[in-house]
Length: 201
Image 1 (tube, rainbow, N blue to C red):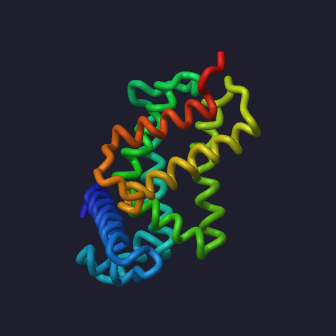
Image 2 (image 1 turned 90 degrees about the horizontal axis):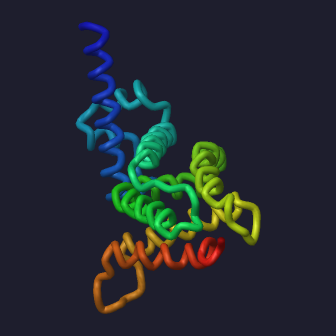
């Protein structure tokens, strides 16, 4: 078998294992998922997992790397602005994250669960996420902030993530109606822009 074909097969198997893991995490939760659950879901032999990942945490870290790569690609899209004095710049980031969270909520929740029980994984995740946090902090550089830009950036990302999880998991307050994504995005945008950018020259 040619080397190129073997690489393609290996890449396909790795992708199938990651996709299977997300499906199982959705059903069982990350903490309750066993490696055999993942390989059974993928229709692969149990031993095949270790050809690609050292353990379940390594698979989750690979999923995080995929998410970060997607986020980097999103940052190259039209409409991305870097000055949070501009409400449209804030809205672009809120909308991008809202869509991202809707697509990848299961993986984001799994990352959170893993970090609560594994300090080394939590540290590694923080290291991988540091450039994204710095990205937001750089967008705040023209504002008069109440604290260090990285601290304010962490407030921005933490609130955005928590709010998205609350509503997209179906645990938000009962309104008697289903709020649209646009309503949620505009509400968050107004809150953030008024709090960290609104009215500043």
